[in-house]
Length: 129
Image (cartoon, rainbow, N blue to C red; front, side, top):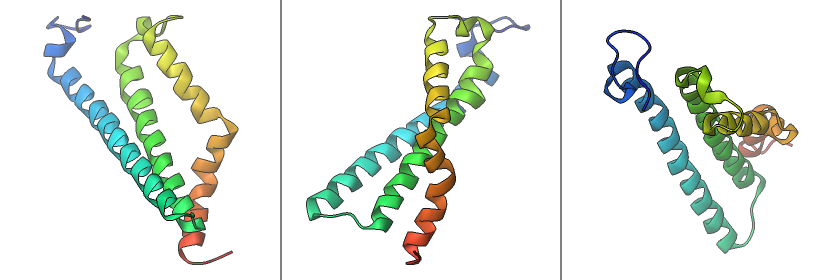
């Protein structure tokens, strides 16, 4: 329901820039969702066969990390930036999304996803201890 801040004042849904920004963010979210579904399916397929090896485990970690990165990029780079400061008031939907994503990104477990999983995936792929 918001309008543009500068002339021509129109609903943001009708503004070419906001349409593009929405498209960028939506593309990231849609891609993240598709990747997460693929990741879950791969996990179920491996589990049905019995056991995970180190490479399969790190492959799933890498896929999951990309999901989180895509969601963070959509939130941080697009939604938060273009939603306006009024949309992040305490209790607002955007404030909750921002807080949840920020908490996830700063969680100590996420450090593994960001820093170590890339190296561990390569090591597992090439059989390096």
